Amino acid sequence: MSFSNKLCGAIFRMAGWRIENRLSEMPKKCVFCVAPHTSNWDFIVGRICYSALDLGIKPKFLIKKFWTDFPFGLIIKPLGGIGVDRGKKNNLVDTVVSEMNSHESFQLAITPEGTRKSNKHWKRGFYLIARNSNVPLVLAGIDFKRKTVILDGSFVPTDDMDSDIERIKQWYIENDVQGKHPENFAV
Image (tube, rainbow, N blue to C red; front, side, top):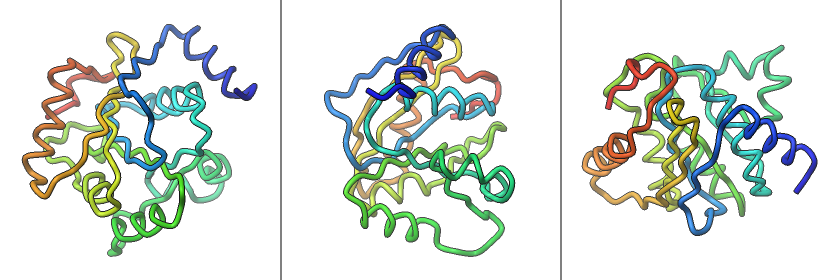
């Protein structure tokens, strides 16, 4: 374990957070479905948690393109940020699937809500990327009430996207995962 990973683990624990890892083994390729996303603190907690896990893989995450432009990009890109221009018509799913398929290890974190505001209509890209890459979804809940990050799943997408997404949302309800601003988490 590197010094920076140990430091992240210490910071995480000193801040009162813990990791509840229910996975028997972390897949080398996966899409982390991270919810709820109600605050900018989600990124900080999630990124420190990932470093504390010391998986030996550089994580990737999708973020608004603004954050990968200069000057913020100097920090965000080395952390694994992939800028998304939501106003531009491109096929982000195909681009990410191609990138994932070209690597032996690729772990991508996506917040399916796509916003910190209340949104019952989750974006479907997280699901399509996992399904089209033939990789599992790892359900990741950032629970501010219990100061716990829950990792569960290795949920394999089927061809019934609507039913699968409802099952994924149900997991967050059953585990009572509460965001920093719970009123903004709509499932």
